[in-house]
Amino acid sequence: MFIANSSYMQKIKNIADKIKALKLNVYIWGESGVGKTFLAKYIAPNGVINPKKDSIKPVILEDFDKNMQIIKGEFIIATGKKPINKDIFEKYFVIDLELKPLRERKEDIPEFIDYFINQAKEELKIEKKIKITKPDISENLNSLKRQIYKKLLISSKEEVYEILKDILKDSHLTYDEEIKLFEKTLFSAMKDVYKSKLKISEKLKMNRVTLTKKMKELNV
Image 1: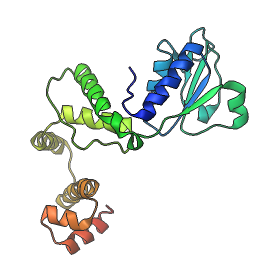
Image 2: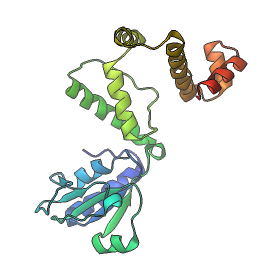
Image 3: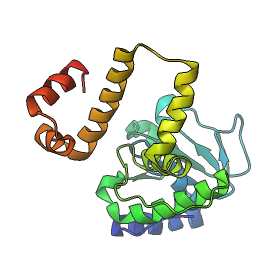
Image 4: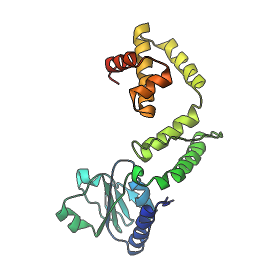
C-alpha cells in the first residue's frame, strides 16, 4: 500500500514506479517516521529487510547513513535520516529521494489515520469507532500510530483512572509526589493543546501567576 494524496507524494510515487520498473538502486532519506520503509516496501514488495548476507531478491537496508554497509541484492533500497557522502552515493546508488515530514504534506494524514485504525483493529481484535480530531504528527507516522493505538485501547478518562487505581494499589509514592506527577501530566497536556499560559489558565480556571509558578516548579 502506498498513500499519496498530496501532489508531492504523487510525484514521489511516479518516481518510485520508475525505480521499481527499472530496478534502480535508490537511497531514501528523511526524518524518523516519514514512511521511508513504507516507500521501500512499495518499490520492492518482496524485498529482504536488513539481510545478513547477499540476496537474489531486492535488499532494503534501513539506517544506512549510520553503518554504510552494503549487502548486495537484485537491487538496493537504502534508507536514512540524512543525505550521505557524495562519493558513497555515486558508488552505490543511481537516485535519491527525500521524504518530507507530515507537517509539509498534511493532505496525506487522513488516509494514514484510516490505515492505522484498520491495522490496529485487526491486530488488537477491537471493534469500536474512534475519531482523531487533533492528529499527533510530532514524530510523523510514529506518533500518529501510537496515538491511534492508545485511543483504541483506552477511550475514556474513566478507564484511565480505573487502570491508575489498579497500579496505585501495587505501588505508590507519597501524596505530594503523586499530586506533583498528576499536575505535571495535566500541565504538559494543556501546554500541547493551548500553547500559551493565558489560555491554559482560562481553560483550567486557575490564577495565571499560580499556574506559571507551578509549571516552572514542575519544569513543564
